[in-house]
Length: 372
Image 1: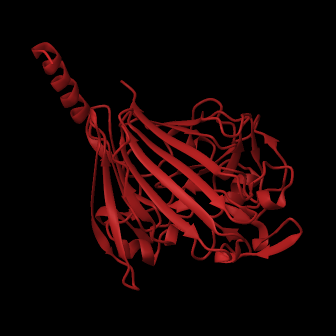
Image 2 (image 1 turned 180 degrees about the vertical axis):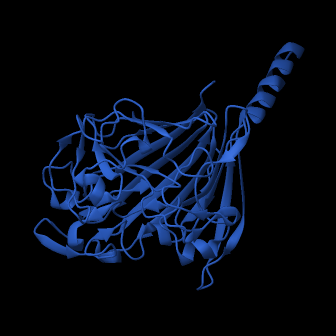
């Protein structure tokens, strides 16, 4: 090797090291039954940082820059494991086996009737009493990836929370040099089951206060109306002429108090938007911009639906990071998913997973800033 070649090789090697992200871990406490929980810190080369714990696959914090370059935490959560275990409204977690609601906790599959826990009044919500948000995931740092990457795995046994089949799930979290938090979920089963995984961070791009001045754009022409228990009626309703039309950027607070039955049922926005797209193709679904910090978040996914929730059940009882009590509408959720109650709605895209098939859902939260 000549001198020039050696020099270039050294420069390239140094550049790959400098450009790479990093992943570190530390203990984050123990569950009441003595199981250890770890927290992993993923950083890209520009400073963006996500902290993810093995309890619930939870994003505990997510620091991204504002227009001045200052990093700020844009997700709600707690400082301690004990608070997550005590009372968490799904802050930052991986939701499963079934994200969102299943009517009356019942569904049929291949002629068999299954009964699930009813943990949201008369309905089943987010996987039940002990969903994926309340289990400890095994963790592996993936050192062969170009970005800071962590893999979490969990096997849900046959019959857990009433679901059929042993479901093996892998969740890959990456913080990329494009200032993205990238989530890739896969699953496989040993007997027919239903599967609908998603992510449940409560975002606040200002870092504090209410989210009513966040401007939201959702590129969907329809949504799924719900009944008074927030179960879809089965209809796909055009957003045209309703407070659910976010095809042009509109602040969350602009129409949230409108005289609309759907807003009254949800106490605000807590609905699924429907996209004309090929399921499995990664496409942009939503864009959110916060005016004071300039932060922008784009949401991309392979899923056919997006649940937009405006933090309507936050009421100040959850005292979060830094002792801040999270008040009404201090955070919003953007949850790419299949539609709520799909196991009971044959007209909705199927959530059935059979042996030999692989469930896939990729979600990307991409951050940038707007200049003044």
